[in-house]
Amino acid sequence: MAQQELRRDLKNRHVQLIAIGGTIGTGLFLGSGKAIQLAGPSIILAYLIIGMAVFFVMRALGELLLSNSGYQSFTDFAVDYIGPWAGFVTGWTYWFCWIMVAMADIIAVGVYVQYWFDIPQWIPALICLVILLGLNLLTVKLFGELEFWFALIKVITILALIILGTILLVIGFQTDTGAVSVQNLWEYGGLFPNGASGFLLSFQMVVFAYVGVELVGVSAAETANPQKNIPSAINKIPMRILFFYVGALFVILCINPWNQLNASSSPFVQVFGLVGIPVAAGIINFVVLTSAASACNSGLFSTSRILFNLGSHKQGPAKLAKLNKNHVPSNALLTSTVVVSIGAFLSKLIPEQAFGIVTTISAICFIWVWGIILISHIRYTKLRPDLRKKSTFKAPLTPFMNYVVLALFVFILIIMLYAEATRLSVLMTPLWFALLFVLYLFRRKNSN
Image (cartoon, rainbow, N blue to C red):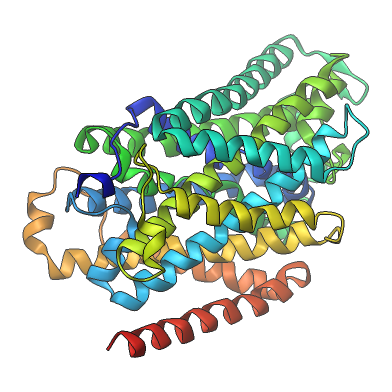
C-alpha cells in the first residue's frame, strides 16, 4: 500500500549533514573539555582510534544495507543474520539511546536560552520541542533541510576555529598563557600527562562524541538513489568528522595548555575568549544552542523511524507503523516526542550527575548497536557468500577488522566498569537488556 511507504526524499547533501549533525554536538562542544582533563593532549589519539573503529562499523553497515533493497535500517538485517530477538532488542535499545540523548539536548536548550533570558529552563525546552515536532510532521524533506542548516552552522564554527588557530599558530600569537605553539602539546607533562589510565578513561566520552554517525542506516529508507548516496555518505562522513574533531582539538590544545582548560565549560568558548574576541561567548552560546536543537532534531527523526520499523515488523504496537498524508510516521513521532518532553518537565529534578549517567548509558547502548552491525556483517559473509561476491561496496579487511573492533568495544566496556565515575551506569545497563529479553519472550509467547 503506497500510503505506508516512506518517501525517498533525502538527497545526498541531506544524508551527509544528518549524520554529521547528529554526531557533532555536546560530545565535542562540551564533552571534550572533560575528556581533555582526563587524557591531556593524548585525547587526539583517542579520537583517532575510535574514529577509525567507527569507519569500519560504517563500511559494514553500508554493505549490509545495499545487499537488500528491502532493508530500512540495521534492525532488519539483525533479524535476518542473528535472529528476531536481535532485531527486537537492538531496535528498542537504539530508541532508548536516542531518547536519552534527545532528553539531555532539550534540557540543554533551556539552559542555553537562560544565557540571554531569565526564564525557567523548561519553557524554551518545551517550545523548541514543539517546533521540532511540527517541522518533522510535515515532510522528511523539510527535516532534511532543517538538519542541513543546523549542521552547517556547527561545521562553519569548527572550520572558523581551525582556520583562526592555524593563523595564530603560524604568527606565534601571544595570549595570557603564552605563545600559541605546537609545543603546548607536550610541554605540560608530555602527551600522556595522566598516564595510560587517564588516556583510557577518556574513551567513554570519545565514544559518546561519535554516536549518531550510524544515522545513515536509519535514513536509508528515505534516501533517494541509495546505491549511490549511501556509499558516498559513508565514505566521506567518518573522515570529515575525524577532521573536525582532531583538527579542532589540535588547534585548541596549541592555543591553550590542556591543564588550563575548564572541564565544566566549553573549550570553544574559552579559546575564542582567550584570543580576544569580545562577543565569543554569545556567538558560541548560539552555536551550542543550535547544536543541541540539531541533536534533538536528529533524535526525534531516528527514534520515530525506529518505532515505525518496529511497528511494521510486529515488534511493537501496529499503530506505530501508520503514516500521515505526508508519508511521515506521525504516531511514532508523537510517541517519541511525548517521552522526550518528560525530560523537559523534569529538568529541575535531575541532579547534576544525571548528564554523566545518561552519556555513559548511551555510550554502552550505542556500543551494543555498533556491535550488532559488526556481528551481522560477519554472519552475512558466512551465510550469504553469493551476495558478498556481488557486492559493489565491500567492507575492507573483513572479517579481521570486525573482530578487532569488537575486541576494542569489549575493552572499553571493561575500562568503564573499572572507572568509578562510570561503574554504576555499566552495572545498571544490563537491567535494560534483561527487561527487553523478558518483553520479547512475552510477545513471542502471545503471538503463537
